[in-house]
Length: 221
Image: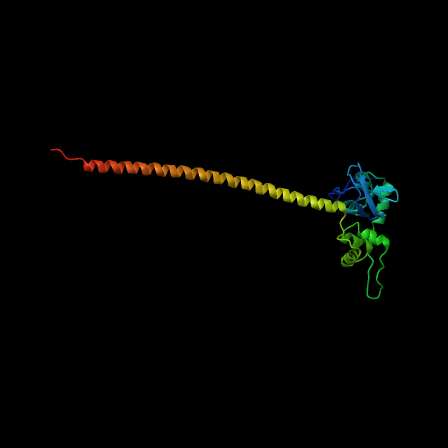
């Protein structure tokens, strides 16, 4: 093994953020359940299926398996060389999707398919079952399912909406406070201006009264 064969040449490879309990598709083992994250040099989600726990070969890891050497993948993701070679063999060809034509009968829905489309997104369900997004959407509507998101994803979306609403409220509160301060300054300026005008008017009235008094004084010879 050459020194460079254990180094990643392509990338970057980023660890995906996944919540425990989420179902994703592993290109080697199929649908798996996320149960944790590895502690390797490049942490990666661990998937469980039929009691077997193994890294999930998807996203950046699947790309690395196709591009990098098995030695580099084994070193970066903390797995054996034999496992990395097994992954590379399984990922050598992209997964083939079943096609439905006019000559072929409709693909029957299985109970496992119905369970699957209730756990993953529409696009993911279409890819895993070999159907179109429209077909999955119609099936979900028939089963009474509102959408293809997991409860965790729904909660995350609601949390993000609540954060946006809270941010908007904070901005509105700050702008309202600034507007109140500006109005207070305008009120103070108005009161001062009014007092200044009253003062000068009183001074002008005093000078006018003084001039009238001087004109009325008798002239002594």
